[in-house]
Every structure is written in C-alpha cells, then in structure tokens.
Image 1 (spheres, helix red, strand yellow):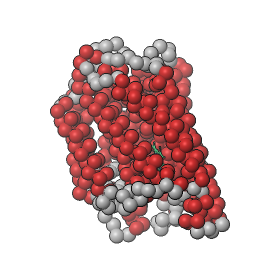
Image 2 (cartoon, helix red, strand yellow):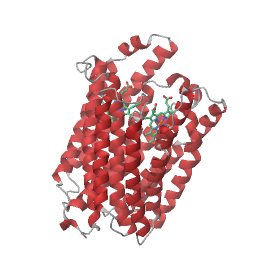
Image 3 (cartoon, helix red, strand yellow):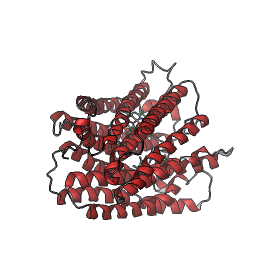
Image 4 (tube, helix red, strand yellow):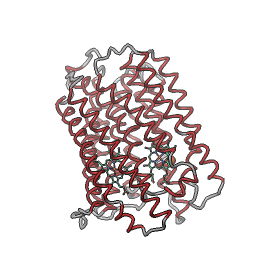
Amino acid sequence: MKYKSQKVAYWFFALSMLLLVLQITYGFIMGFARIGFDGLHEFIPFNTARAVHTNLLVVWLLSGFMGAAYYIIPEEAQNELVSVKLAYVQLISLAVVGVIAIIGFHFNYWEGRKFLEIPRPLDYLVVVNVLLFLGIILLTLFKGKRRTTTALVLSMGLLFAALLYLPGMLQFDSQTMDSFFRWWVVHLWVEGVWELIMGGILSFLLIKLTGVDREVIEKWLYVIVGLTFLSGILGTGHHYYYIGVNKIWIIVGGIFSALEPLAFLAMALFAVNMYRKGEKKHPNKIALYWTIGSAIVSFVGAGLLGFAHTIPQTNIYTHGTLVTAMHGHLAFWGAYAMIVLAIISYALPNLTGRKMFDSSRGRMAFWMSNIGMVGMTVAFGVAGVAQVYLERKMKMDFMLVQNEISVHFIVLVTCATLFTTGIILYILEFIKHGTPSDEALETKE
Ligand code: HEM
Ligand code: HEM
Ligand SMILES: [Fe+2]
C-alpha cells in the first residue's frame, strides 16, 4: 500500500467476510426449511430468515464498497484519508446498527418491505453513518493532489446510493405509492448507481492489473456510465407493470429495461478487452480472476437472466416467483459480491505485505464458489419455471405447488454446499494473510 490510512479498508473487508458467513448460514436455514427440515421454525421462521439473509447481503456488500473506497480513494487522490479515527468510528457504528437491525428482525422489529426491512429509527442512524463515510471520502478526494475519473465515478456512485436511500423512508398509506418509491431504492441501486460503484472499482482494478493506460480504461468508463443511466433510470418501469400506476409504464419499462443488459455487456467487453490488451505481468492472478469473472458473470446473471423476465408479457407470469430468486442470486453474485471479492484479493497482499498471489487454494475458492453458484441458479431456475407453470398456468394452489417443487431444493442445498466450500477457502486465504502492517508501506505493486 502507498498510504498508511488505507489500512482502515482491511477492517471493513473483515466485517464484510463475517457478515457473508452469517448470510450464508441463513441461506441454509431457508434451503433446509424448503426441503422439510424446519426445526428452527419456532425461533427463525422462513420470513425472518429471508429478511436476515437479504439484509445481511446488502450490509456486507456496503461494507465491502466502503472498504474499497477507503483503499482506492487515497491512492487515486494521492492523499491520506482526512481522518482515520472517524473512519473507525464509522466502521463500528455500521457494525452496531447492522447487528441491532438483524437481532431486531428476530423479534418482529421491522418494516415488512422486502429489502427495506430496517425500521425507521434505525434508518436515521444509517443516514448519519453514511454521511460520516461520505464526508471522509469526499474531503479526502477534494483535498487530494489528483482527481481521476475512476475516483469520481466511484464517489458519485456512493453519493447517489446514499441519496437514493431517502425515498425508501417516505411514508404512504397506499400500497401502490409505497411500492412505487421502494423501487427507487431497490432498482435504482442495483441497476443504476451501484453499477457506477462497480464500474469505478473495475476500472481501478483493470488499471492496476492489466497495465493498460488509464486514458483508455477511463474512456470505457464514460460509455458504461452513459449506458447505465440511459437504460436504468426509465428501466425502473419493469417493476411498475401491474402495480396500479399509469399503463404507460408497460411500454416505457419494457423498452428501457430491455436495453439494460447493454451496460453489463459493455462491462464484460471492457474487462476482457483490457485483459487482452494488457501485458499480463501483474503477479496477482487471483485478483484478475475475480475481476474478469465479475464482469462476465454479472452480464449473465443481471443482463441475460434479467432480460429473461423483463418483458411485460413474461413478467406477468414470472413476477415474484423463484424465477426472480434465480436472477437475484446470479446478478448479486456476479456484479457485486465478485467485485468486492476482487478488490479484497487485490488489496490484501498490499495491506499485509504477504504476497500469497497465485495459491491453489485461492484458485479453488474461485472455481468452487462460481460453479456452486451457477448450480444454485439452475436449481432456482428449474424450480421457478415449474412453479410458474403449475401455479400460474395450471392454477394450482400456492402451497401445493411449493410442495411439488421442494425436490429442487435438495439440488439447491447440494450446490450451495459446493459454493460454501469455495467461500470457506476464500476466507481461509483472507485469515492466512494476517492483519495489515506498516512494513507493507511503499511496497512495489
Ligand atoms: C447487478 C444487477 C442486478 C441485480 C443485483 C438484480 C437483482 C434483482 C433482485 C434481488 C430482484 C428482486 C427484487 C425484489 O423483488 O424486491 C430483481 C428483480 C428484477 N430484476 Fe433484477 N437485478 C439486476 C439487474 C437486472 C437487469 C439488468 C434486468 C433487466 C434486463 C433485471 C430485471 C429484473 C426484473 C424484471 C425484476 C422483477 C422480477 C419480478 O417481477 O418478480 N434486473 N432483480
Ligand atoms: C449457501 C448459500 C445460499 C443459499 C442456500 C441461499 C438460499 C436462498 C433462499 C432459499 C432464498 C429464498 C427464496 C424464496 O423466496 O423462496 C434466498 C433469497 C435470496 N438470496 Fe440466497 N442463498 C444463498 C446465498 C446467497 C448469496 C451468496 C447471495 C448473493 C450473492 C444471495 C442472494 C439472495 C437474494 C438477493 C435473495 C432474494 C431473492 C428474491 O428477491 O427473490 N443468496 N436465498
Ligand atoms: Fe429492476
């Protein structure tokens, strides 16, 4: 690492890994419950497990993004973080708010809105936490010697993500209005501003790992930002088809959301092209795997599998079924989980000074988790298509259908075990690197 204050990033990454393990645990609780092993039902019913699983996902990804920013911004801006102490305060308060929310969910202290279950009083704490984070990052950037496109896109993504949390805090009595604004958060995050965060991290990693000129890489970044906004903003309409708003959204949502895969396609082409152009000299091959992998898997999970149910004539059948879970898993995995794992793989040797670059355990972690996740996606997909057919076409009762498709969850849990083995190997590598040390300062990258 080049700046001492970058060490803060390590602890955000560590929190991220801890929460990932917890998220997976709740995934298994649900997977087993779906097969009929629901022994924990009294304490952790399915709806609680689901809310904990998805919220932990969001928090570990955010912690990963924040760690990425604390690592990347000093290096791009050529400036130490303006306050390391406040960054640690921010880390601890993030962990505390997360833990209170997750414990609260087990006691029905929540709002019943998918992905936005965190109750209102805690929302205010989230806002304070994120303001503190943004303050540190933006001040560091503006006081720095250099303002790169990469740093600007990353910070813009983080700033907009914070602003877009606010529409989720508006209160309505109408279910339609509530739903309308809930998507400003959920959709405009994952199919809008988080893509900028991903683009920023991707660009930083490609500059470091491929050796291609910054100018070339950052030109692509403009194209990606353009395509994201062009398609993603009005693409929100693919959630408005049948919720009781103006019918114009059927056309607008259909057209613009069908264009959304272009941004992910551009990211995949970008990464592969830069890899081809590059000198391939950087020794950290594992980080390269995760970086290129993220760009490709996100195109499949978000772009292709998103497209698969985004047309109104399809979505009327698939809405809210396991087809959505199929897409949700591979999209989140490819775009956001993998890019966080990529920046961690890149940063860890630089932070700790231990250059465990190309270990076979690291490569196994990559392949096992990816093959496992693809298997899980297929299992969700097959279950989802069966569900659509039986429930929506044959008009069978919801619960009867759930019984019929429970066999697919045996496949899901099997693939999830492979996936989890990969994640355990990844975390073992993480632990093996040890904690950051000042001796790692100024080492050649
Ligand atoms: C990395 C990017 C993406 C992520 C992480 C993601 C994730 C998700 C998740 C978790 C849901 C369920 C949300 C909920 O019900 O509250 C969802 C729904 C949906 N996504 Fe994506 N998505 C991404 C990109 C895309 C793209 C590019 C498209 C279209 C081309 C798309 C199309 C859809 C559609 C149509 C739904 C609604 C499904 C339904 O009606 O039940 N997604 N997505
Ligand atoms: C061992 C691993 C995992 C298992 C067994 C698992 C299982 C499940 C199950 C059973 C559901 C509920 C589906 C339903 O409504 O019936 C779910 C939801 C979800 N999981 Fe996982 N999961 C795992 C890991 C992950 C990972 C690593 C991610 C993200 C990268 C993820 C993202 C999600 C999302 C976004 C949803 C909500 C989907 C939707 O809105 O329809 N899960 N998971
Ligand atoms: Fe969407």
